[in-house]
Length: 346
Ligand SMILES: NC(=O)c1ccc[n+]([C@@H]2O[C@H](COP(=O)([O-])OP(=O)(O)OC[C@H]3O[C@@H](n4cnc5c(N)ncnc54)[C@H](O)[C@@H]3O)[C@@H](O)[C@H]2O)c1
Image 1 (cartoon, rainbow, N blue to C red):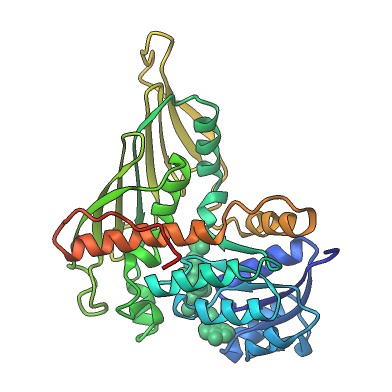
Image 2 (cartoon, rainbow, N blue to C red):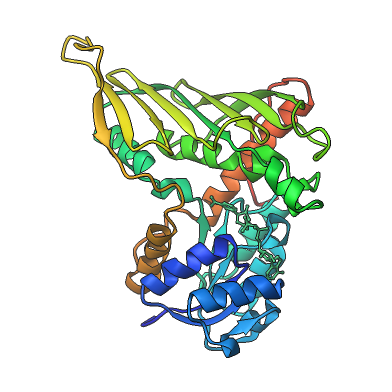
């Protein structure tokens, strides 16, 4: 492929991806939103002519010029759109979570593997967050030794979303906060450890968004990774604080304490005798960019134009959802141990 000719479906998160595509030099063939005001606003802001705007996503499916599509619609729609776009031969970058149900993730994995001519990337954007990228580099360089405990949290107050837009798609009982938003923290730990949690147990509470959602607004899960690595994820979608993904990574030689909203990352490193000499960590500067859509799109573009491997494959997206569904199941069963199922062929 010589040039990306792009369509974007859904223009809230999709507007960030649109900027990434424009910055990367892609041709924008069509942008789509069912909300005409959103379509006009984003189209005007990004200088997309009116003939390149549509309210019907099927226009993107049927457009023969388009070779690459960004899906940034509500999670419930991802499966239908992925399946139709694959049938039309499009490469796809789809926002997280891949989907919300076991049935849908299995179907999507099957559909993508049935279309090897199309490349697919799941948009787990935390893998491009500068602090998390730095942590991954330190882990891979062996600076933390062997990991033994990792924790992350997704704390994000959705109250304003529900108040401003009652009946929001995020209130659908099928969209549990652990899958919808908590998937960021689960995916981050899977990526940093380089393994999938083999067992989980979880508890949930529902004290904050009682009038707005029928499922828990806070969930705590403990997980076990292969190699005897322990993990913890806390998800709160009603928390009374600003958005954060505080994350700690403990290894036999060092410890990282970070937050995707902080401009620094704290790194404690032991000397050859295993001692941390100072109570002060190394403070490493990182830029704050927890929606690094430009870097994310650039990665997909590189795969399409230069053949670099896609690391955020459909299976990666499915594994993250599978682990999240296991957490939800455990919390609904009062903390029973659940073994996530990573076989998507059933
Ligand atoms: N990576 C992240 O950090 C991040 C952050 C927020 C949302 N998301 C994900 O991005 C996706 C979109 O979330 P959002 O926050 O942008 O939601 P949103 O509700 O703010 O915006 C969705 C947009 O899609 C439009 N839309 C809905 N159905 C459509 C259709 N069939 N065709 C065309 N347009 C349609 C809506 O009018 C709206 O403008 C979801 O999958 C969500 O989970 C990811």
